[in-house]
Structure formats: structure tokens, C-alpha cells
Length: 519
Ligand code: HEM
Image (cartoon, rainbow, N blue to C red; front, side, top):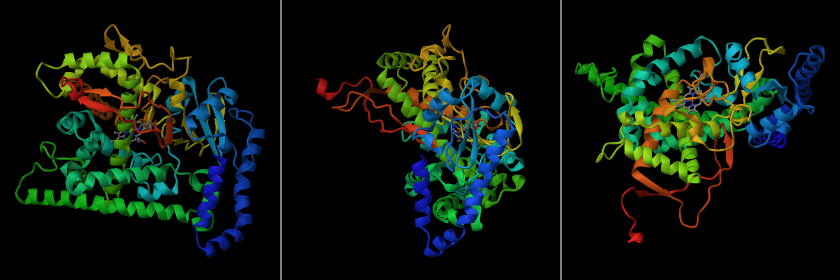
């Protein structure tokens, strides 16, 4: 990581004009001061205040950055075991940024329960500021009125329970095409996402966005240095983000304009249903346009929110489904039990599993729960930031500290789980019902959706999508490895989300139809 950070700085600097190199040279002493001052502050404070959480030994300038490998949740779990306190808290310095790591149920309860308000902000960086116009959406916005309004908007108009039910038609219709991407796109932007191959363009833009957001940027580690000379060192990252934002903007403008035209022509023909809840084709963009005045939304605010719903919305459910299928292939006994449950739960002759059929699929829910325990797609949650000083479990945590909660480590901790590395969906079944530890934010040993004020607002929405897609994949098809493949590599890759390093390739055959080679 140390190497990667320095390479990144060098690459960014090298990408700039020679004028920038001279500026960099002239500003070098100032930069050093900016780096050293926070360090001095950090160390004097540490000496003065014996109540800081424990830390491993640090290096000058990079702090503990060199101790974090390509899978940060794994490195942080190992570091916490060796250097963290018994309470599960550890303080690191990543570059110049103090970072509190919570790796136990008790620590998670402290920071996300007791001190949820103090840690309700998010650290900022140039890339997300540029891409998300401010930021002016939900995930990256600092704690405050702007965030509150944006969150209210998406929870009231896209992700609440009634909406989850009303988008059910979309889910059932889309589920046998390209699944999660289409389900979210369809709920957000209606059928217009399909025109002119836009769904593919959306998918490519989402991939590019996560590559950029997941990159190592100078300002995430040296915020002071990144501000020097008007942020000249951040210019390359800023330009990349602006280019990508222009691509998004181009596409989103077209889609928004089409929706605005639909509303205008519906109004002209006195069809009040477009943009209202009753119209079958009403989607989130119609709704956003109809509440634009009420929430004081600019065109940029609308684009930032759409961008986020399409980006955040497609990745986690899709990654979860991929991990579920991988675990099922590795555990054929679980696959067989799930197939039996799904196939017996739908009326004879019915081809597609409908949402009503899901109620009795207890084992299906347990399989999803167990996969989220072993493979939480956001293993360290989205980083939080304290916006005021606070006392956590007797330690003093200063305002501006980044918080990482290692839910991946907590979900595999033998203190809270029997045989934690085993894939055992039955651990969540009690007397034939789904039960036990839950992931709704109150059981701090199981937080794939986070907890507290900044908890994922799309939990019900995501579960509804995952359940219906999984049930249909299992009902319709029998699954096999492609010829020559007899194992699955479960190695992970981290890039904002945890995903599988290797794409999962499986062969589906229609259930009930014998393969020609078997005749
Ligand atoms: C399996 C699916 C998903 C998982 C596991 C997941 C997980 C998470 C996690 C861990 C957080 C951070 C919580 C925290 O800081 O405490 C989060 C935040 C968020 N998620 Fe999800 N998510 C999923 C699906 C979705 C979908 C489908 C959407 C949108 C359509 C979405 C929208 C958001 C938003 C807007 C936030 C930011 C909330 C805030 O900062 O106030 N998520 N999610």
C-alpha cells in the first residue's frame, strides 16, 4: 500500500505539465510543513493524552499505510488481533488521517449505536465531490440538512416499503433478463434505459465510476497537501472525474429530458397519472421531476441522485447473488435442499416464481442471510467520519477521525459464531422459521447493511430483488460447472465493494429437460 500510495503521487505529478513540476518544487518546503504539522500534532497529542486507542508502530509520513494490503478488511482484522484493544478498538494513521477501526461487536455498538450521531458524517475527496456535484446526494454527503433532505427523498419516493411492493411488477418482468442491473435501472428510469443500448452504457459507466472511486487519491491520505496551491496536485484526479461526470451527464440529460417531455405531453392531454403513483410506467425520474420544486432540486441535484441510485443500486445485490451461486455450487447439499424447497413452494404448472410464493421459502432466506454473513459486499461499511470530539469506551476520539467498522471480521469472529468459516444456512433456522441474529442494524455482530443514521436505506428493496431472482434461477435451471472446471476459486478482490476475483462461470440447463448428450 505504501508503495501504491507513492506510485500514485508520482504518477499524478508526472501527468501534469512542467509548470506544475516547478510549482511542486517551489512548494516543497510548504508541503513538508503541511505533512509534518499534523504528525507533530498527532504525536504530541498521543503523549499528552493517554486515552487514545492502541496502535501498531507507525512509520513517518505514511503512518500505518504500509500495513494495509490489497484486501483491507483482512489486513485490518489481522492488525486488530495483534495490536487492537480487548474492546476491539484500534487507532491507525493512514497518511495524515487518523482512522479508528472497530473490529468487535462491542466496538461496533459503541460507534454505531451509542455514538452514531458523532460518527454520522463521511470523509470527502475530490473525486466524489466532482462526480456527485458537491456532493449533493446521499452516500457521500456530510452529515447535515442537505444529507437529511436527500435521504428523505430517496427513502420516501424510491425505497420505502410501499414502493418496494409497487415495483414488484418490474422485478418479476425483468428477472429473467439481466437481473439486478435492469431491476434497479427500470425502477429508477423506466423503460427508457433500454433504448439505443443504454443499459450497456450505464453498466460501463458504473464500472468506470467504481474504478475511479476505488483508486488511491492523494487527498484521502494527505488532505492538507492536496489543498496546497489551490489543489494543483489534485488536478489529474479532478480532470478524470470531470470527464467521467460529463459522460454520465450526457446520458442522464437525455433520459431526464425524455421524462420531462412525457410529463408535459401528459399534462397537455390532462392525463394526471404520469408522474403520479398510480401510473404503471411511473418511475423514480418522473417522481423526482414532480417533487423538484418541493425539495428545491437543481438539474445537478437530480443527476447526482440518479447517478447514485444506479451506481450503488446495482453492484451490491449483483455481487451478493454471485457469491450465493458460488457457495451453492461448493455446497451441493445446500443446493439440493434449496431446489427442493423452491420447487415444492410453487403451484404445479406455474413457470415463474412470484413474490407471493416467497413467503414460505424459509431456507432461501437463510441462504441469503448466510451469504451476507460470510461475504458482506461492503466489508468495512462506507467510511464514516466524526464531526465532533467524543469519548468512545473511555478513549478520546477527535473530530475529523475516519471510522472503519470491520463487519467482515465481526461476522467471522468465533466469539459470536459457531464454526464461523463454514457455510451453514441452518444456523438461521429455528423451529422451521427464519430467526436468530438479524441484520437489520440492531444485532451488532451482523451488520452487512450498517446501522444507525447512515444505515443502508435500501435493505428491503435489495432483499426483495435478490430473493425473487435467486428463487427463479433455482427453480428454472439446474447448474453445472463448464467442462474442465471442477472447483471454484473463492479469492476476493476489493474495490469499494468486495467482489470475486474470478468471474463465476456456470452452465444452466432448463430444469426438467434432459440434456441431448444424456439420451
Ligand atoms: C445487498 C445489497 C446492499 C448492501 C449489502 C448494502 C450495504 C450498504 C452499507 C454497508 C452501507 C453503509 C452503511 C453505514 O455507513 O452504516 C450502505 C449505504 C447506502 N446504500 Fe446500500 N447496500 C445494498 C444495496 C443498496 C441499493 C440497491 C441501493 C440503492 C438503490 C443502496 C443505496 C445506499 C445508499 C443511498 C447508502 C447511503 C446511506 C447514507 O449515507 O445515509 N444500497 N449500503
